[in-house]
Length: 438
Ligand code: ASP
Image 1 (cartoon, helix red, strand yellow):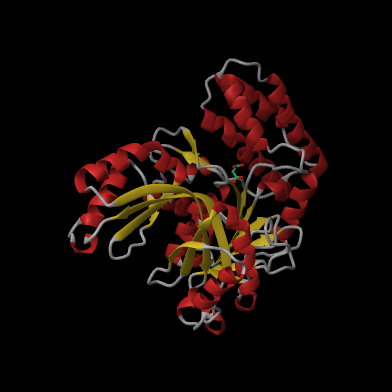
Image 2: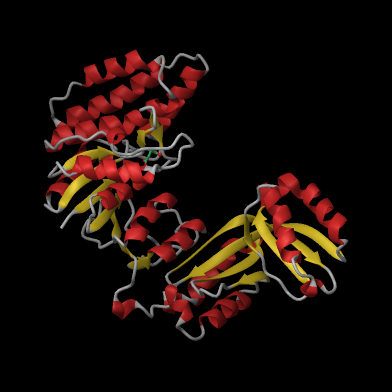
C-alpha cells in the first residue's frame, strides 16, 4: 500500500505544526511520499510565506528595497528550524537565495517557500528530499507537460522508499522554475499520487473534510463523508473551494481515491473522494449545495426562432468570438438565454447586442445582470424520486423567485438562477429543505 500525504500551509505554519505533520506521516508506514506547501499563517493576523515571497518579487521588480521582506521570511524559517531542534544550514540557503535574487524570475522566488519547507521537513524526518524541479515539467505556456512529468516522476521516485517533495513548482523546457496557480501544491500531490500509482492520496488541511454547504452561510454544515470526483468537480466549480481545481484530473482519470483530512483532528475520517461510490451509498440523493454570484443573462426573443436551423449555433459563435465562456443556455420555443459571468459579458455587451440585432432583428433582447447560480449536486439525484420537487418547493416556501432552472440530462446537479440579493437565502432554504437527503 502506498499513500501520498500532502500537507497544506496551515498544517506547516510553524515548527510545532511541522513536527505534528511528521508524526502523522510516521504513524503510518504506508505514507511514503510527503508533499509540502510553504508555511502558512499561524493566526489571523499572520502572513503566508508565499504571500511574502510574491511581495518580495514585486518589490524587486519595481526596484524597491526588499531586504525587510527577506528578513521576515528568513526569521520565519529560522524559528521553524529552532523549534524543530535540527541542524540545518539555513544561512547557506539564504546566502544562495540572496546571490541569485538579482537575476531570479518571479516563479523561482515564490517557489522558495515550498523548497525550503521541503528541505527542512526532510531533515527533520531524516528522509530524502526530492526537488520537484526534477519531477514536474511545464510547457512554455504554463500547462503541465503530462507525459514527461509522469515519466520523470515515475523513473526518479522508483528509487525511493520514501521522500519529501515540495509542492507548487516544477521546471520548464529550459530548466527554469515554473509554478502552478495559487494553491498548486494540491496539484503536485495528485500528480505524485498518480506517478507512484498510489492507493490513496491524502490531502491534510485545517478543516475536517468538505462541507455540504458554505460554512459562512450555514452554521456548522454537515460534513460530506463520501463524494465522487464528478460531484467534487461540480461543487468546486460552483464555489466550494477545497482542493485546487486541477488536482482532481490526475486522480479522476486513474480512479485513485483521495481523502481530505484535518491535521488538528486526525481521528476524523474527513471526506473520501472516489471514482465510484461504495455500493451501499450509491443511492444517497444529495451530496452538497454550492453557488456563486456575478452572472448575467443574455435573453433573445424572436417569433419562430425554433424553426431557424443554426440560430443557436450562430448566437454561441458570436459569444465565443468575444472570448466568453458561457455557463448555461436554457431555451424555450421562441426564447434563448445565454448565461455567462458578468465581467466577461460586460466587456463586450454592446458589440454582442449590435451583432445579433444586425443579423436577426429579434423582437426583444436584453442583458440582465445580478444573477446568482446555486447548484444542488448529487449522483443520486437521477435515481431518487422527488429531489427536484423538493428543491423547487424549498425555494418557493422561502418566497424566492426563480429566474432560471437547469438540470442537465446527466442529473448530476440541478442549477437554480436567482437574484443575487436572494443568494444566501436560497442556500439556507435549500440546506434546510434538503437536510434529510444530505
Ligand atoms: N504556497 C502556495 C500558495 O500559497 C501553494 C500552496 O500552498 O499550495 O499558493
